Image (cartoon, rainbow, N blue to C red; front, top):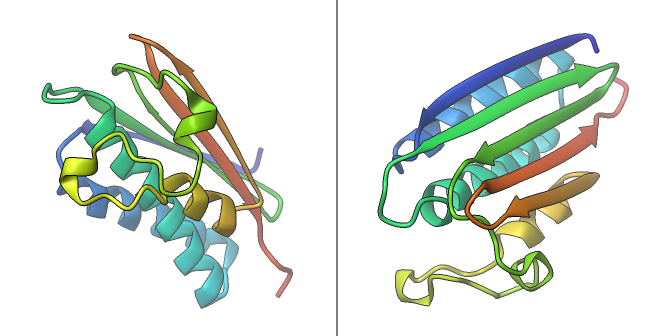
Length: 140
């Protein structure tokens, strides 16, 4: 591993922008293209938004954002210690949303899968969710 960072913040919606900015700043170490940077920011934003909205329901909790760089590969891990996901396969289906009343599109995992090279989701009911995603950047 060449570099890493870790950040924890409350599950407040305005912290999504903060996490997105931190992820972008960390990724700039690799001198990404504008397209790569935009994809990374969007994927991290979706993972953090899921943790904020779905992780704790109406309670307060912490969201953790970790970043790791190994060569030209960057990995982000977004985790919460909230309620967990009952059915990961169903949650990862396009247009599925656990909050239809919130005008959510249900495309978060699909966007993460589109913009990153790999995504893994682990969840324990009552114990939280961890999303690991990585992307190998082009040589410049």
